[in-house]
Image (cartoon, rainbow, N blue to C red):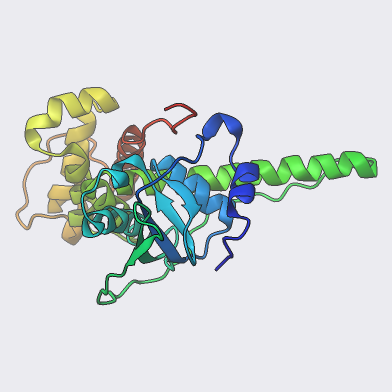
Length: 282
């Protein structure tokens, strides 16, 4: 929880000038009543989705041209719910993310619209990026050590931010991506899960040729993959099918290879869904 008294000055310091537009008049803003994220992190993540963190009445709020285009407060709240789902559900970037009132700034004074919802059960998991502790070079002067520390902390933050964005942005843009992210979190996936991840990324078998060309999947690789996930003569009871048959290839993938293969494909596909971060004037 944080005060909004000096929010704009905080945001001006947090967001680089090249990645920021001027805060303009907004019609609708939806308050963020609860978040576990630090101010700068929340603002940067929202910015990557095309939203701006602005001052609400009691809480900071999110706004965007797409929300301002809404006719009713209910429509605006639906847009914000999609943001909340991306933060909370599969990506688990901020399990505590909660929306508050919709603020109508077209009236004077601004008018609040509150929507009551039934709480859903959300499994809370910790989400973090791999970190590596690095010690500063020896014999630095106090001033050099201070500069090194600031630079190091900034690089750590940017690495964390990129890790968060790599999940948040695809989850927001595509229900299929959200499902893929959810399935990728399973530590010991079944063959059904592994193949479902592939199918979600592919979209439909009619897309197979284009999908394979785009992501560099050879026909032999795919056949080796199918041998592993489908054929019990290759992977036993782990396989999707019950009937035994001759493998398509002489060197089918192992279970571990099949899982690695599909995780690499999923990572490339999720990355392909991300767009450029908006810049000033965009």
